[in-house]
Image (tube, rainbow, N blue to C red; front, side, top):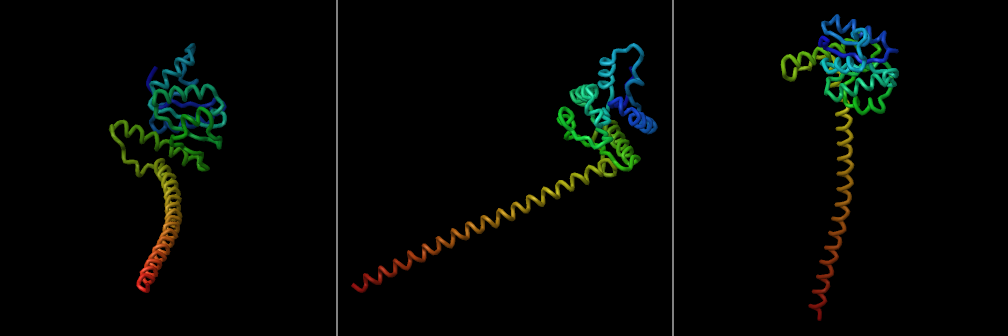
Length: 210
């Protein structure tokens, strides 16, 4: 078996989408492995698919309601995750993560479903290109101009601003509460001190009068 750049995991019900992705990815110069196209006649499915996942650099998951329910897709994902493959989930509908897929993909960067299909494919190709550029150079690539990571950076920035605002509000409220508590205690202590001083002087005045 030849080594391919990308293993495409998908439900057979989503084959039209998978075929479209292959066309775009291979047009961009990357090689893809996909069943059943790359399975030779008479080959054992489970063995040939496992070897294809091991040999490929990127595991591309076409995520949908169909693939979420597919035991084959889940098995392929488990192999890719166990082998620490670079995972790219490509969402084609609004299905939510759950079960095995949530455990394995929850912290991954997604190519989210986009109204503009060309934009979504552009983000996918950018993510693939960045991976191979990084791999070739053997170091972290400057990805500031990569549209895929620009979208990720925007999402992270929004989350950081939200959490920062909540933390600031929490600190302000806590400060106000602590100030009120300490101020109240100080007023009580000052009052006690003044009363003690007054009693002391009254006692001395009484002694002088005796």
